[in-house]
Length: 232
Length: 361
Image (cartoon, rainbow over all chains, first blue to last red; front, side, top):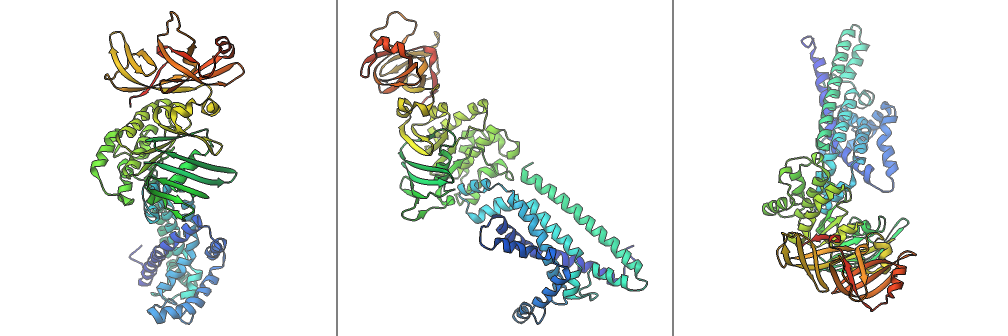
């Protein structure tokens, strides 16, 4: 089956994996920070922050994609700044696809991490501080390891969401084969093309296989992390 | 090292107001649950902030609201053994023990690790996980973990409360060893008279968020006006004695006390060893004048210092006997028949089998 894949299909698969990995890993530190803030912080505007984080979950993806285009496009306020200051261009590049995927997956990531942070026994953190550990050490040695199952779950959810991202991606970075054409965009293109049914079906099968493997892997990781945290 | 406390703290409906000094090696915070003991311990550890006041250990100010000083918990070097252990589940026992040295900025110290492991008998547990330990083992590891963070003061919040009696008996000797071998001031929270009487030298009595008495254990437990709080049925005092003669064959140990000589069932110990004995009020009988032939052989001379009413029919009489207080529980008609008065010299009679040995020390 794999011998018969065309180069452009290989491109789509490689790009999808790269976009999803970069999206999940790059948003990880932000995800942890925001989740910690929402789980523990008591500050004005907390509810507002919570709502903003969740917006991509409820807005039509095409709206998110368009907003990204307006903000991060080459003439957008942030996109223009990035291009002039750092030479980074996001619009119609694979990096833009990663940004779109990261934004779409962010609410899921934060949610999983926050739930796990909220279940951590604050009394263990207190115990660590009586042993002389300052706040950073307490976070690194107690909070973070105990939240590991939730952090892994958030990472996998974000990765999975990124693999399936279509609406925001196609709006923000288009559907350029070899550049921004991910698996979903490629399937969409094949379906639109006469005689493309078989290629669409093949990519669909691969898509299912990747998703399945990711879920199994995350399940295994989560189980191991939970065992470790419970000390068994 | 003096512990100075003078703080106020309001938590919802509960208000704590505590003021006392203690020079004791072990200061017991004693009182019913909800009386404010744990709140005070958390204030000393810095887990909560007082609304007003000062806490000082020796020359170190931990918190002083007037001078706007509030050392954060991790800089206080106050060890804390929690009621529920609070071991880190994702570290091994060794990882828990060395946590303070690895992440708390305390110097690495293999020698002390060995010493503490030996003191608490936890060498076989080092590579186990907290989830695999029994309740008593967990508490021993928790004590070791606190010790290895090199505290200037150790807080123990009912460290035995979560354990059944057998486990309590298992831990108790370790706490005694801690007191005698580590030379570390300890603040020990408890609502159990036996624990406090056996361990502490200074007692702080809490009632509804207030400190109603603070002083030497004997003095506070001996005060009849406080008997409502120190417990009706377990009224007891501690006698400080010394072994003068051992007769293992007859199964008798003779003890010297300033108010008289005591013979008790044989207890191991060299001549001259100090021994603390707890005597319950219900085991003390009072005689006026020289008693005749009795089976009770232990007689201590004393003077009535106080007579207090406990129930309608019961009185408690506190004697001063050679520097130790002694409480006798007697009926009102008996007191009337003997015509007992404060200042009157009497003889206290105690059965040999009535003593609880507390410790040597």
